[in-house]
Image (cartoon, rainbow, N blue to C red; front, top):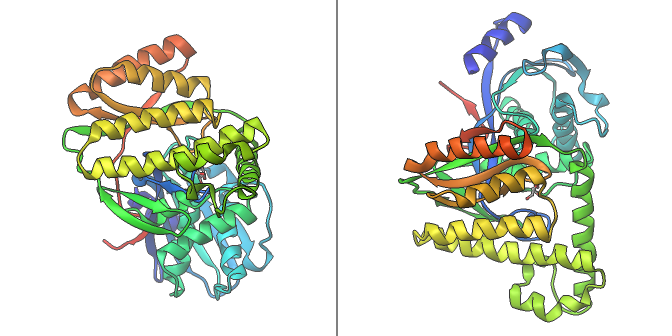
Length: 389
Ligand code: GLA
């Protein structure tokens, strides 16, 4: 991959000077969905798929960017002093957003840079291609201009730019996973404090199988912001009854004792999901550390049901994928992953059942939806970085 990008860079912008290579991954979340803006825990891992980039510093205030994934956009030549928030959400807006976020946070870059990038992951599939696109400029600027920022700050910059430049009110999970991923581990992150733990996956007899539904329903962005508002309303009601800062401060018992403080029934369901999902995530990680994969899988299944019924962010296609997976022998657990309304499911499948799983799911998915799904075996990988060899 990176050789192809390097070759294109030299063709477009010349082979001289200090040319550097970078990679930023997408992510898959194993459990802990829609908890990251509710002060809860998440448990994602970075993937080996993502965006590759090649960059070289310039002396002036210009950038020249080319994305081989979207060749029709041509080379974008822009002035870094003109970047201002918009909601267009095109790949170069994600680049510009991070440079703008750096400036907003007192880390202005001294000059522009030339860059060529290329993705090897499916866009719009809920595997955070957008976080990977944001971590590319973060890691490039950090390295090219020797900025005194660590990778946690790179994650925060990505989220800040997505919230304030691109108008998507996301939490920190995706950018954190892309920036901080570690090979063969998932990240147990407390989104209220940003304290985290790398938990080895130790899957010798199982694989993490991602199934792409190949659908992305239009309401995803606006419904996401709605869910966030509904959770905030529930929190404000609860705070009149109990002293908490976030929904993540409550456990199941605390929620049941105080839930009637939430006036609106829909908001009550949203809060129930946020509280129970956070607890499920904590229990799931405990189970994994003890080697109790069966318990982990059961919690994944419960997570899907809660996202389907209480948080209402699933869709018929994701439900078919998860529900059919639950029927297959050798499937430890299966659930939708990411924001929802399309995208992917994540399943833990015994090695010797993976083939049958793919055969069976492809067949039933086609029968029930008329669509073809796609599979990827997740390979938990390191986070965004400069590639040195
Ligand atoms: C999207 C957001 C994340 C997170 C998930 C749901 O991926 O970008 O911050 O909220 O949805 O868990």
